[in-house]
Image (cartoon, rainbow, N blue to C red):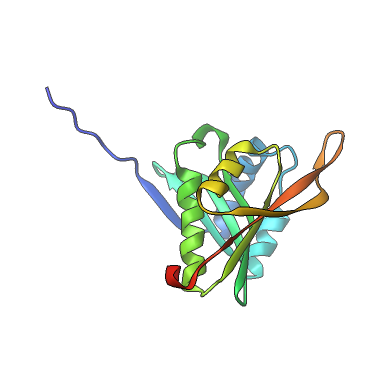
Length: 159
């Protein structure tokens, strides 16, 4: 008996206005304090680099990155909780790193909650380092939570 192993169909493509309704559904599943439609709309209108990841033809994740001069800032990177821990976030983050290289970016920044252990592991695995904290950055049900600030320097030989 032989078995055929089929690789899942994964597509990373630019985010469009039509995606925002699906993105908001994922935001609401993934975050206690999600971004709203206006924020995503404004990011697209401002020309930020927005991307979605499809798995088996379903939109399951997305990210938004601001690119300016020689730095970039990943503002949001999210995979639906039902699709986490299968490598989709890693693929999307690698996509952002490749985009940064094509724009001659030397440093990429992002923030994450110190309680978001899965995200922290992903970022550290891909070469990000903690460079600081933003005090009282994120809302919580009982107040505010700090943000870890992480950065990755892209070396000239990587670009």
